[in-house]
Image (cartoon, rainbow, N blue to C red; front, side, top):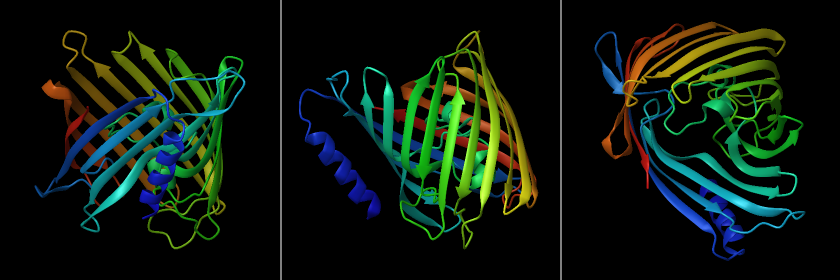
Length: 318
């Protein structure tokens, strides 16, 4: 009900503006499965889960320099199947309203969005299966709250105050997060950034929020765009005074001789209460009709699902 109330409120704000604004509606289908070494086939417990979704974009057609205005609305919702609870639930992915001042390019965003921390902004592609360090570190990479973004010379500066609850749009006792990132814009062929995060996130499965801080450096190198993308991130921090650290290295290679095919590989190491290691190697194939197929071999230590073969069939389009 909280999700639906938020959707109605955001739509009312946009409808009040009127005018010949731009509107787009996209449909989404994600079918994901995981086959273990023992041969058992199950729905994937990892992101992205099997889901049906839609994404609605609204963009204001007019802007007035020097005045703040509601400029963009993004509503991205999914009916996703959780194989752990064996339930289908409505969940928000990107659900936010953005205000901006056109002359300076300053922006304020309210809703559910990617935290400005680490590689998450660079990896936030629809249907993406290679997750960042936010997944083992916080248990989520998106949160509900308020974010601001602006330019500082050649750099982009972003900060956010969020609830620290991940998918749930509700206040939790003692929870809350502050995060910020300073880095080069995403359209550069060489990107790098420095991030800080501090607060008390309420991680999935935990009964209380945990005092947490993180510092991270990240970088992306794009060669012969869009064929080769090399990315990396290193995090250092603590949970309730216990040291935590992680490292991510990844490569995506679209084959120049046949751009419909690509290779994806990534390694993640995370150390907090336990050590988690993940190695992923796989292929992607663009199919007719805006479909994408992925097949990944995944090795995971200290994970309930273990190692196995991950498959995905994904559609995103009008």
